[in-house]
Length: 103
Ligand SMILES: [Zn+2]
Ligand SMILES: [Zn+2]
Image 1 (cartoon, rainbow, N blue to C red):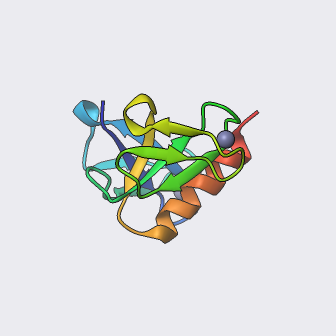
Image 2 (image 1 turned 90 degrees about the vertical axis):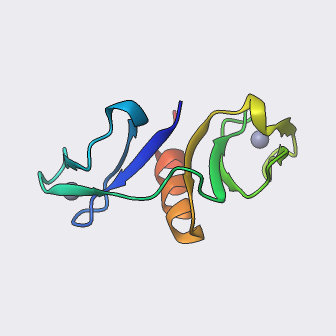
Image 3 (image 1 turned 30 degrees about the vertical axis):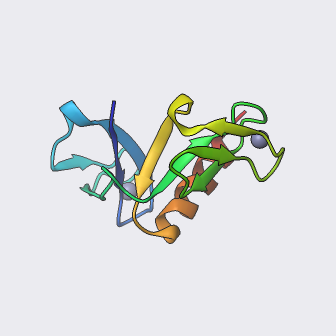
């Protein structure tokens, strides 16, 4: 299932919508403005979660993901891709957001 990231240009809130339900605009639950869709399908940089230490990280790898925190290496096909974007800045925003929300 492809998920598409939407980012609020006003307050920076990020959320994901599932591709089949995707609309070109959706309103921000934080500030109520319209959120624009950011590219996500087929981006070069993928945001994944390490199954071992649960840390979210961005990777450009297609085959194996190696965790920078615990060193565990996992096949990309076994990981859930939370977002896939084309620029490193967006990737780091998402990673920070996801890591700050994890329990
Ligand atoms: Zn907002
Ligand atoms: Zn790890």
